[in-house]
Image (cartoon, rainbow, N blue to C red; front, side, top):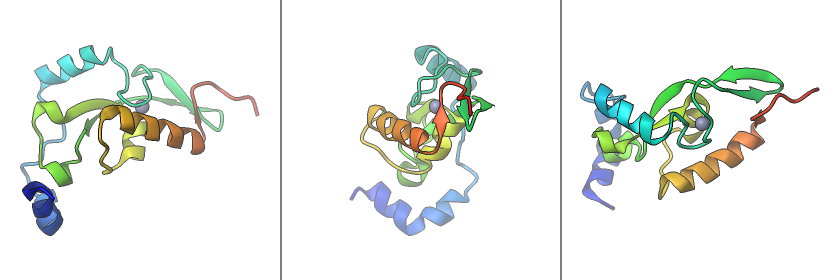
Length: 124
Ligand SMILES: [Zn+2]
């Protein structure tokens, strides 16, 4: 266990409520991340502004910023710890930690499916 994770476990709640926590990368770096990801979610690969469907209902995907290593473990709000993810993937990922963005994407895509999210509109 690293110092940081021990610290987060012991003081996580207190640190989590601190005011230094950043929820977004800087504006300039945010644009770079989006360009790198070709304006697609890092996990589901759907373009932001496009739609996903759940029980036939469209959900427009918004950009949310995800800490690759959850903040509670890493306390890392540096620009390199952010990826752009849609609100659906971000909610599914929650504060879980994965070895890599690819690992996270594989797990999240399976869970999207089992929770009824589809990339097309199903006819009932
Ligand atoms: Zn997504």
